[in-house]
Amino acid sequence: MRVGSLIKLRPEYEERYIILHKHVFPGVLTRIRMSRIRNYSIYLHDGILFSYYEYEGDNYDLDMAQIGEDAETRDWWKLTDPMQEPIASRKEGEWWASMDEVFHWDKKGAVGERKRRMALSASLKGRSEDQAIKSLKIAYPILVETSSLNDILNFSVYHKDGCLYSCFEFSDKDSSSDIQKLRESLKVEDELNWVPMKEVFHTD
Image 1 (cartoon, rainbow, N blue to C red):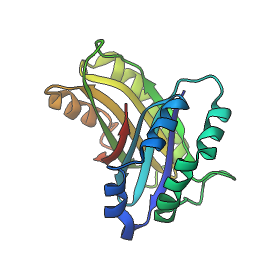
Image 2 (cartoon, one colour; image 1 turned 180 degrees about the vertical axis):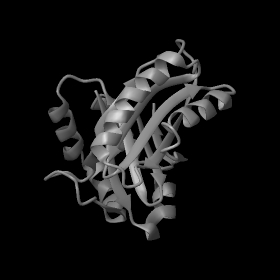
Image 3 (cartoon, rainbow, N blue to C red; image 1 turned 90 degrees about the vertical axis):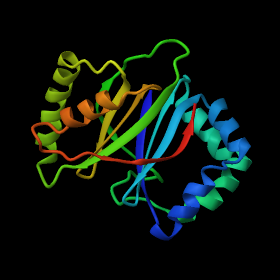
C-alpha cells in the first residue's frame, strides 16, 4: 500500500523544520517501523510538504492508531504541528491531506543495491484537472513501455489541487542521464514543467 499526502509548511519555520527532521526522536522512528511503514520520505518545495511511504502491514487503521497513541510521537507532534498548516481540501479528520495516485511503475533494483530518491512537482497551469489526469494515465504507461530508463525504480505520480507530485528511486550510481530523460518525458508534450523538491526526511 502506497500513501501520498500534502500539508503546508509555515515559511517562518522552514529552517527549523528541516533541522528538526535531521534529529528525529528515536522513539518516533521505532514506532514508524513497528507500524510496518517503510521507505517514508518528506519533500519540500515552495511551502508545500509532500510525503510518501509504503505500508506493509495488514491492519492499517490499527497501526496508524498506535502511532497516534505513542507518547514520544505525540511529543514530536507538539513540535511539528505548529509549523504546519493543513490545506483546505483535506478530508474531515485529516491533518495531512490524502492524495490520489495517478500512476505507479514498480521496478525493483538488484538485491542489496543502494538507492537514492527524488521528488518533482508540477502545476497543471489551469488546465482541466480531469482531462490532464486522463492524458497522463494514457501517456505514462507508454513512457514505461517505450523507454530505456534502466536506473529508475519504484516511480509514483500523485495529484492534488491542480498540481502533480512524482517520487521515484534510482540506482546509487551515475543515473543523471536517466533522470534527465525521465524529466523530459514527464512533460507530456511540453505541457508540464517539473521542478525538484528538497528531501527533508527519510526512513529505510
